[in-house]
Image (cartoon, rainbow, N blue to C red; front, top):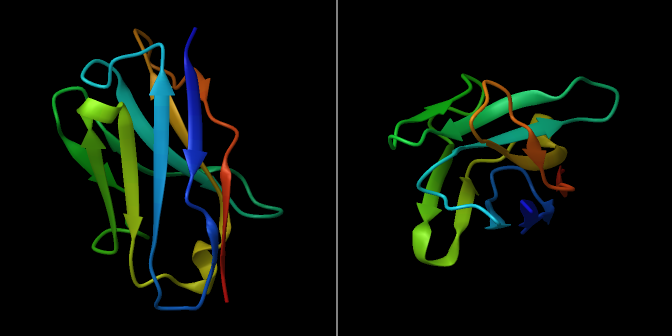
Length: 116
């Protein structure tokens, strides 16, 4: 049974930083592709970045250079370090796992990030 739990969200002023974490159970992080997504109020969910099973990391243009994804295999955790936050980064942030599928089939419940 795969379970993903995000944490670390909160309220921060523009140009501030937050670090989100996603702890997984039922999977090994070396295997699946792990992704971060976000959904702002009234908007569609958008991809933020992902960490492939081969270690490659890719980011959306909107966060490139400001956000960093990292993995802590010992603690089954994937982190999203967010720097230089902007008001437009305000959203619910979700982590997801893609396991033996072209789609992200496992999702956490999300953590809210508010930038003012």
